[in-house]
Amino acid sequence: MSLEEVNHLSQTISAVAILASLIFVALQLRRAEKYQRALMHQGRAALVVDAFLRAAEGPAAELLAKARSGTLDFTPLEIAQLTMGQRAINELFFDTLTQHENKLVDHATFEQAQNWGRTVMALPVMRAVWQLNRHTYSTKLAEVVDRTIIKDVPLATPISPDALKDLLASAVGPTDRA
Image 1 (tube, rainbow, N blue to C red):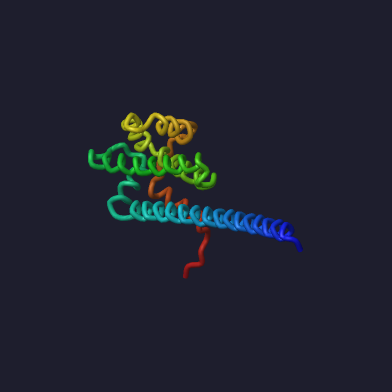
Image 2: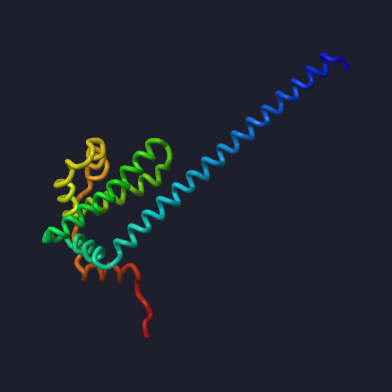
């Protein structure tokens, strides 16, 4: 084997090694991206679960039940609490929207945030709070909320405690109680 052939063989081996290294790096990048997305979803889930658990406790749960009752008889403190709650939901929605536009969260995650926003904005008091505070949001967020959350979403029908009990009983069905 001549010196020229050895040189050619070593260059070929070097090229194959570089190609193998690039493939390995590409696979590592893909895996790192998947792990990053998993961490983002896990963080989002923890944030949402924490918010729901807070809303299920004491005064927050009472305020939510009052809002769902259809009444518009709220104290200034309750309106402030509803405003901050709505702001938190809108900020989470806007963050989800931004990440969805940048392909960092999937469509199902975005749709879930959008549906939660629709559920909240269907409450008459929350729709009123939005109208009072819409001007405090960015133009983009305000337009997106109007277009994708409020548009075509009817106001919720208040549910009385008795109607809720009947609904729960029908969902459970007949039971064998001794």
